[in-house]
Image (tube, rainbow, N blue to C red; front, top):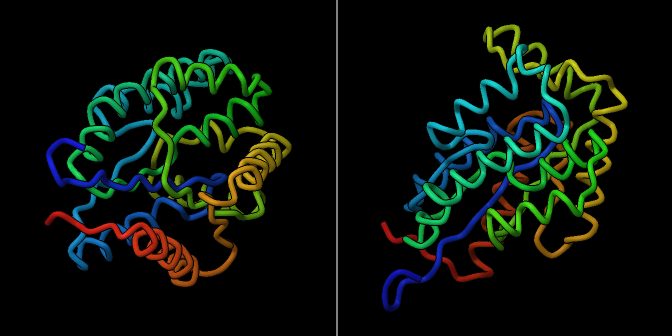
Length: 225
């Protein structure tokens, strides 16, 4: 809280394998919630700050192929420190509704599940340098990696976006990432909702919106607009 009588905001994170549709759905959720009067902050990782966007280009672009798993972990954590300190924590203290495209769950899934780094090292870095901030709700957009990768590669090619380094990883890598996400969901059933992302965008976003509204109603959250 930042002032007497002001409630803390709510922190909602979208996670999932490449091509699960979480980013486009999160944008739709933000627009829908803003139309209902909620004070929404829409952000992403890596990114969300000028420094984070610079690291995003290094990590996701083709020339980012040189990074080892350990280097990825440190760079992702550095971007998250800036992001939390400058964007997420202040917005939550102001009572705002933060929608974030990826957070610590993606680091556990990609650098832990995919790259094979110890999850204990990942969570220790988060605890020591980011703090104890965790999502109030994680929306896990779940799709078969083969379907997701086809979608993501088509999108990147069509948009001419140089962010395809993880799409270039082999299918086994992406299956390990998905398994990690599902394991995380199983370990946090009270704060994670699995969204079936195999269908069309409208049905996927409808599921996600329903989960978000349940959280807001259950926690008696009100916007400060």
